[in-house]
Amino acid sequence: MPGYEAVTPTDAPPQPAQSVSERPLPLFTRIDHVGIAVDDLDESIAWYETTYGLTVFSRETNEQQGVDEAMLLVAHTPVGGSYVQLLKPTREDSPVGKFLARNGPGVHHIGYGVVDVEAAMRSIEQAGVRLVDARPRHGSMGASIAFLHPKDTGGVLTELVQAVEGDA
Ligand code: V0V
Ligand code: CO
Image (cartoon, rainbow, N blue to C red; front, top):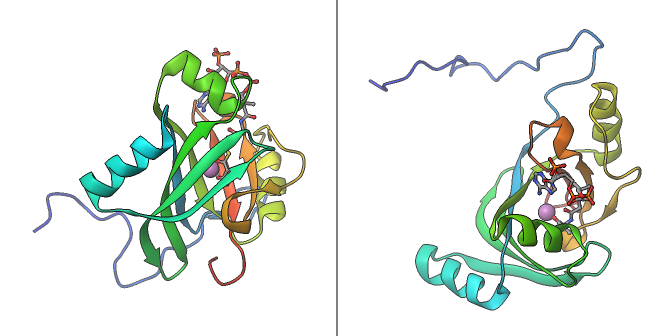
């Protein structure tokens, strides 16, 4: 017997909860990645490889976001991949640069998978959450991404991720 009570009946798929404004919910398909700010990318990659046995799935520089980043695969799921994203700033005056200076290394953001990033942005805006991005941006591995302001999400910088076709 598990020491907890399941909230969702196991023999039925979870029913989408509809808000009063009839926004189609839920919006998220999975946790796409957890973004972690690091001081040294190579050292951090080596630590994740040797400690957890994760492997680098992609590595790129995103000048617009001011990051050198590596995606380490945790699992392929039926609805797409799930990753740890290690982030090193390319300049001090960037979101991750400022975060590191203020907090040191640690969890920076959570990226949730969505089917349609623009639809998700409109829906979340309707719920009164400020978007950092007015339009989707280029994200890791060709994804379309958009950030929600942490001041409207209980202090959690939140990223919407529409992965490229075939990894959605
Ligand atoms: C800042 N704040 C955070 C935070 N970063 N709170 C929680 N989590 C974070 N990661 C808080 C900070 O403590 C301040 O709170 C307030 O927000 C203002 O922060 P700031 O750094 O002084 O000022 P801003 O407004 O210049 O920057 C905050 C935002 C910025 C969120 C707007 O970080 C941003 O645009 N982030 C989105 C882009 C991003 O993070 N890119 C890097 C990952 P107090 O002191 O006022 O209370 S790129 C990525 O993930 C990619 C490419 C991908 O996945 O594919
Ligand atoms: Co990210």
